[in-house]
Structure formats: structure tokens, C-alpha cells
Length: 197
Image (tube, rainbow, N blue to C red; front, top):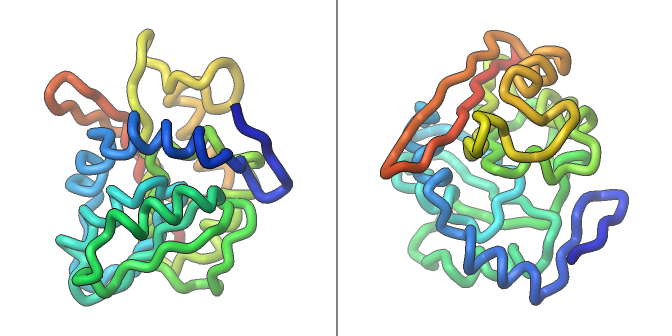
């Protein structure tokens, strides 16, 4: 369905359009943004932004800061740009992977990863990159859809369940790691909060 290179998963145009149609407006985007405690002057990086839904939701709150949506798939970036009004001046979409963020160090007040952590080629490298780009006291928000068996729905391994995800975030060097759950119209997400000291 897709192939990967060193910088992350690359989906062909057909698969990206299918994903955008099926999951682009997934409820996890607005639930996450509404519960991320955003400020009007935040500088947000959304990793694995897909069609940009979360970025557009965030722009309703972040009116004096900046928002960058990043995705390794060119078609996703194109769709995100097409779906975003020119009237929103503080959103930028760029191609990039979690493992090699084209962002300067200590630049962002908050990073989000909404249903994207399990797509990263090397999540440990990605978490280290997020620590690098966050300002001191910067916040990191990971959210994931809750599926059957209260798992994160990504098979076996380090990201298989919420306890493991929390442990991996903490092992990466983040502080104050917390796990919360949110439900809306029958859909549930895990929301992980963490901070850079």
C-alpha cells in the first residue's frame, strides 16, 4: 500500500487521497486540539498533519502565534494547502518527518502528534527530535484512537498499549507524563501530555 524511505512513510497519491477521504476529518483532531490547552501566542508544530484538520482547528485559538503542519507525504501537504483558506495567515504546511525535523532547536512551545506516532519509522529518534525543537517548558501532546481491548491498535511492540507509550515518552527524556482519555459521540482517544524541562 505504501513504501518507506529513511525519512518516513511515503504514500502514493491514490493511497493518500483514500486516507484523506476516510480519516482526514477524524474526530481525534478536534478532540485533541480542544483539550491541548493551547494559548493564543503558542508556536505549534503538528507532526503527521495529514490533511491539516488539526492545524485549522488550532488556528481558531492560536491567533497571535504560528502553526506548522508537517507530513512526509507530498500529496497530504498538497491536500492540506488546498483545504486551508488563504484567510488563515499563520499556518504553514511543509514536508518533513518526525525523525529529521527541519526546525531550529528550542523554537516551539507545543508539538502535537495526532494518530501519527505509530507511523514513524523510528519513534525514539522522533521523540528526541521533538525534545530538541521544543522550548524549555514546551509541551508535547500525543493522541491515539482507542480501539478494541483498550489498546492503541497498532499490533504488538512498544506502542501497543497506553502504558507502553507513556513509558517510551518518559524514557525519551520528557517530564510530567500524563495519560488521559476523552470521549465524544462514541469515539474515544488516549491523550498523553508531557513537558520538556
